[in-house]
Image 1 (tube, rainbow, N blue to C red):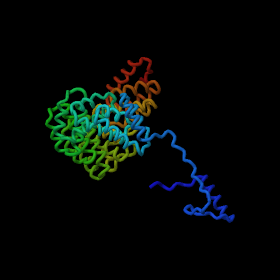
Image 2: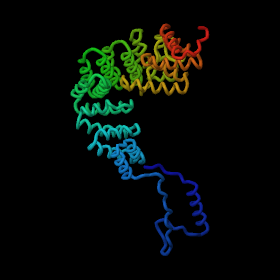
Image 3: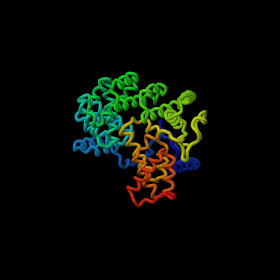
Image 4: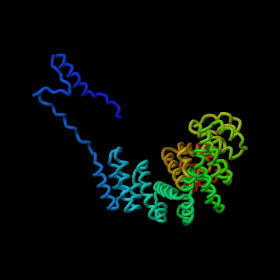
Length: 420
């Protein structure tokens, strides 16, 4: 149902004219009755929508472009359609192209704007690709060069592989060469498996030899479980060594749990011993309650557990986890690239914005490269502010001195901080 449209000024003028005619004694017949011999007034011609193309025209143009290996042009042709027709047309086109040439169909899908249409197109192309040649499908996903396209392709292929048998798919991905993204696509696949059978996915991960691969895929299982059943992710925490993965998982658990059941989340965090694990859990609860953005007081009932917040937000020694969109990303290259892009956007605006955003990340996500870039640019503008931020966010004085020394080695013209 379309909402009733208001009359525009032209319609109101016509209505007023008819009323005046009626008052003057002119009989106004209803629209359904026309006296014999009275000429009918033809409706005014409707203008053609400017720039609109029909679905057959768009499909023909997309076919022509794809045949010339112009995948970007094919995507533009599909996106020239109105939204109401675009999704169905894109699905029809990509499904037909995938039946003949899955890699090209996948390339057209990746060239579409991110969204539901792109996801549906990728799923269609990946399904045909995996059905025909699993090895070629995996290679295609892993050889994408653009980070966003690589992640989307890996996720689509991993999903299709899991649909055909999770354990067999995991074994197949494990057999890939160690380089070239094996860990990332395995982490995505294990996250998919966890949403169907977390116990089986975790058992498969734990049979891997001890090392980085087992740690990464175990963390991926934990993150997937924490998104819906945070308390069930707690046993996964104990399987991870102390460090970045463990603290981030604790933050994700706290963030989801406090949104689902604040009382249970508070009871859980209160019984944690003081230390980095408790810090990470409280940071997650902060984010789940919106405290990270509002920079208010500590969560109710935790005032005595941490002490005061530092200048600029956060508690001493720990900061809230990244936004939910970043928290949901599996650990690996795609997450690191997303963090880098967000940092670059803020640094282009001002060092202050970049510094504030970095302070909102857990310490493991603040890469040395980002801190070094921020320090170099901030020292040029406000050396005292840069020094103060380093004091508040870098716990080791030795490391802080090294950051400043490296910044000045990179650019000898940088000024010294007053008083140093």
